[in-house]
Amino acid sequence: MKDNAAPGGLPFMKMHGAGNDFVVIDLRGRGPVTGAVMTPGLARAIGDRNRGVGFDQLAEITDADGADFGLVFWNSDGTQAGACGNATRCVADHVMRGLGVEQVSLVTARGGLRAERAADGRIWVNMGHPQLDWASIPLSQEVDHLHLPLAGDPVAVGMGNPHCVHFVPDAEAVDLAILGPQIEHAPLFPQRTNVEFASLISPCRMRMRVWERGTGITLACGSGACATAVAAHLRGMIGPRVALEVDGGELEVDWRDDGVWLTGPVARVFDGVLSADYVAAHR
Ligand SMILES: N[C@@H](CCC[C@H](N)C(=O)O)C(=O)O
Image (cartoon, rainbow, N blue to C red; front, side):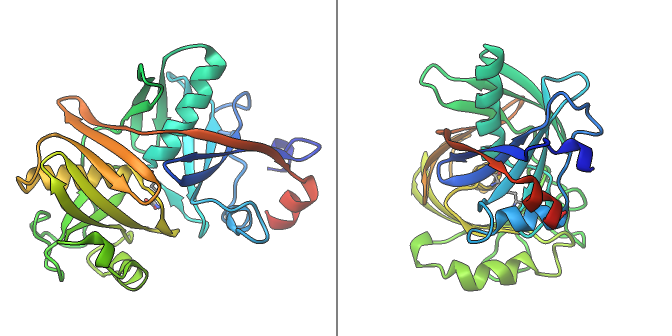
């Protein structure tokens, strides 16, 4: 493990997509299996906004067989996430710039994905098909995922990670800090869940707020935006394409035949190096 850290420390980039912020560690060149250097303890330490760098998710870029790169995601509580749409968009931008291309293929825990740069500079990622059967979301028992037996009649959707989407008249009025952790840990979700509250503004625009599993309240969530769009479409509230107003900006989702496409802004904020001592102390 120690061999993977640069002798002088571990370089990283700080990026964000609509305010969903990430520490990104580029480990390409080390091979697909030996690429990951993170441990739950080190992820928690880096994620600490006072004693570390702070992030909503940490993304490790690895080599991948049959794709341009691989991605591993960590939450700030030290758990891993199977999907992260906004980090995927940020990393795709970084990799495309480095390779001098306008589209890339990648592999995550949920399989192969594709990303591309739009003419306006935003980054689209195809997040794949949503998981709509109870076992693969996953739920702990066979129930109608479109009408969960929970307060508020929410919808469960998997996007490589679980989401519990609530439609409410006014998302601003929801006490996310109280409801988020209660729903995240509801027994119906054996792997816990991300939690969204969304209100309809028009048939092609929604307001969404999110409590992320393993992180808490965040300014945006790409997979959450996808899950909300899928849930709203299946409930007959919107068409297949929708803009979502989130606390940190705007995301757009388009559910096409080949998967759920997500786009929005990305930014590289600064580059830094974690000292070798800090890394060694928290592994
Ligand atoms: N910010 C992400 C999703 C984060 C993953 C989540 N906390 C989990 O544990 O599933 C996104 O943009 O999709």
